[in-house]
Image 1 (cartoon, rainbow, N blue to C red):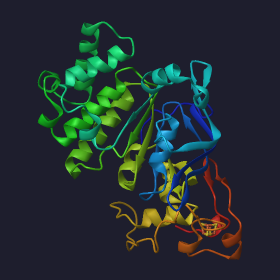
Image 2: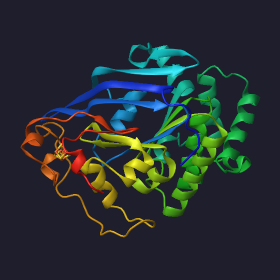
Image 3: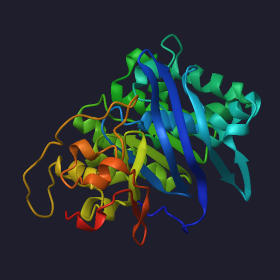
Length: 335
Ligand code: SF4
């Protein structure tokens, strides 16, 4: 766990009752359903959950990079810096452009696609800087060298390379450095290590940990890989069917989860510490977000489900000092 979390109650981002929908042939996909959370200043918050749970859509909504067809049906996203606040959903096009790199940067999965294949790395840094009013090319070059060193790359080699001349892990680190170019306060990393082999994953995570201690930013780490989330995060939010169903410190989420879905997720990965337990897969499949189940969306897969679960949707409630869960029967959930 990093040591970067400052006082609670000092958010970098505050999200309230956020709903995102988009049309599909069969109906309206409710991709994000009533999500509320705060990203504390200096912390790493991991969003975990199965594929298709709405994690990426939520990340895209935070920087308003949703596909055209999607719409934010309701909710509020507030961004705070130096005592002032911005309503992200009310930003105009110019304010939004500035917000996306200078305040809140998103680094996407699949580094090969996110970089321009016909531009050398140095040119991509210069272009990004120029587009945001940093006209001094020498200063940008110096900053680029500094950032590439921070992500453990050799600037002399990397700056003059095209993306295809770099390995997947190197490209991912270039993207992280590019995301940091304009010194944003919030970074959103969407599955940054998915396409990488296990050793490269480790080195990217190591780089992120080091950056967190060197630079002052808050991080949202979107991943389906619980072990990486456990290593990097201060707090973890479990996302199921477009909603946050549990949020708490990394210790609480892994040692005493109160939501059956979180418990099932943690049981589905091997542990190298603590007691041995048989690995268990989660029965059934993720719900259809066009017609999510009535009541608690997890009830068709939940061993604790009762009639109440099948008819009433639980809301997040406090289940520990710094832990919230949305489950009617959280007191019965035993790790
Ligand atoms: Fe399971 Fe009911 Fe809790 Fe939903 S509310 S997770 S169905 S026990």
